[in-house]
Length: 399
Ligand SMILES: *Cc1c(COP(=O)(O)O)cnc(C)c1O
Image (cartoon, rainbow, N blue to C red; front, top):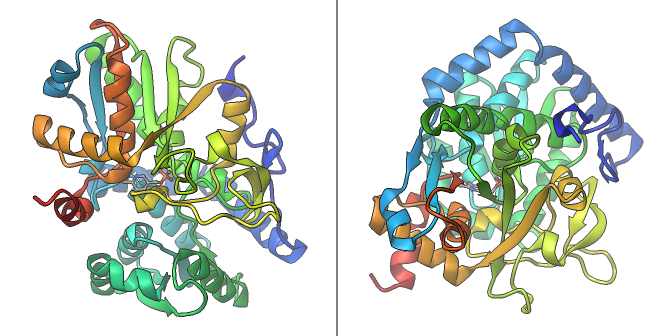
């Protein structure tokens, strides 16, 4: 079966039974306009050249692949390699799709880009892209998150974006989504809602994926050039699933490559404090699309938890759901303790402080390497750097 020949998604935005548009018809017609504009604009040389030029000279692409020699020696077994998305401008993979979305908004003649943010990572990446392409940016953020994530709030202010403090309901991400969405539907002709992962209604899971596939396209070629063969296992952490699908896409047709997505098991899969959507979720609608999600018996999203706030999401991208059902990608989970251990171990063996999100994938690689032989290799997508998590860890471990 050739995955990259299969239309993912189909014309209606479905990845198998997942995805689609579970939204009112007026909104669906707006989403379809975005889709048509995207399909047209993204194929023009002007757009492609502009985006590739920014990837190279602004983001600093291609990001290198690094052989983690000391980590490998410590674990024993397969060689562990890191795709260094943490070295991108702004320190994570999110800039790849935020630049794409901001450029698209500009080319479509939109006047404002809107989004919600939880921990502020998506907000900062989007505010950065909007400052660069000169388009107004408005970020909705819960009052509690604004207090908690002070450095990111300050950065967004410096970058010139308007921050809307959301004081209703939980005063966190969930209500920020509603607030940003209400603003968006006031003038969807002139505004673009920039979703922060491969989630939401069609065309977002497709668009955000397309902007992220640069990660895997680069990685596959870099690995072949340096090692003369493909890695045996590739792995990435899964929140909504954008950095993972970005790495995975180029490898889907390489039958010899095992592909593993790593979800947060939080305080344990047998507790209620995790966000292991694939492992424990059921099929249903969420935020305008169908996916596996963690919901209560009435179909309301459960309050999920992860030590890494970027993985703290009750749903997951629809393409991942299909790849799970097809058996092409394995989905597993790693708990908070293993994540913190990987965070410290990578920092002290390689001098690389990873984002807590990325540390989930590192933890999986550390476990799996031991089951593999020394002539095999694992490639980990190091989705971001851990500066944002340093104080939290230092407190937690009394450093
Ligand atoms: C936001 C974030 C994630 C989670 O998002 P995905 O869409 O699942 O990739 C992972 N790593 C980092 C560093 C992030 O900032």
